[in-house]
Picture (cartoon, helix red, strand yellow):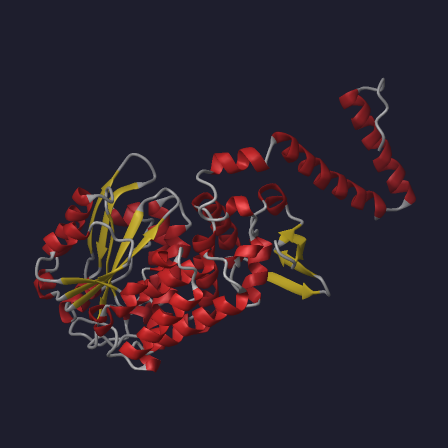
Length: 456
């Protein structure tokens, strides 16, 4: 039944996967758990450090991804260290307790978990400590790095200051010595306004227990570690985080894992998973650079925009990720073509585009995001109009009510139609022009009436 539910997109393995789920009458999943035999065996080999990453979809459902971590784990590939997927019924104490209990039931090695790494927004720590009483729960270096990056974007700092902070953060994360962490702490105190400094929780930098779980890595290992997690987070956000249907989102994740079997064959274990003959459309190595750029753009959208704005823009970014796009540069404008659409993008802040989406919502559209992706840039606060900035608005309705109306909708539709009709009339013969003009004249008269002469 599980295979039918996922349209056959479960990972092929040498033995049946452990799959537990509850299906509602809607296309959504009430609860979901997945672990292949390879994942189960991987966790049994490396249970000491467990890394938990959360991905939300537009409906607010959350995918929990468990990964193994620690000095003994030397795996390459974005999803190579994944050992468990789960979607709890609700993200409350009861829902998480059920999720962890299912995980423990099928993974006896859970008793050997010593450290669990989580993100700063993980609020139900009592539930986690209750289910894993012998494990120490710590903030992960990766999630602290992403948290600080998001805050740097939100603060709308001057570009030179922002660049210095981002560069220092990256350098410190790749060499998290006590001295480097102290230097970054001092830099934040000097560069961030005192009224905003508490938002950054810079005291985390001085908590040596957090960094002992990460400091064993060399600079090169740290760089590969952060890049791998960045791509992992991006893949999960791209396939699950932009899809309202949990079934469709998980099917996309499984399809990616099938098409990239190298992600889960980097380690030779006692039980080796069956080779998947399906060819990968793009290898993780060749796509990693592009995925990193898109992951950074996605993170900047989540950090700078309000929730509704970020959801709208992530939908536009999903089109960019799945489309071929061409960019031709001019002195002040950039021409963006995504499939059949061509529009002009203004580079001056706030960035603007001639497409309907940008004109109606004044948000970064797929064409602006394609430009950022091609230039390996991210969204900057001054590229966004104030009503959409995080913290300035509370709901989508309030923003649309002040910035968008039926009159504007009709005006944009008429404008686009007028431009298209004008283009057709200009690029035709005289005989064809007379025929088209006569037809247009009859349509206007029959719609409005000959008693009111409509200027064409």
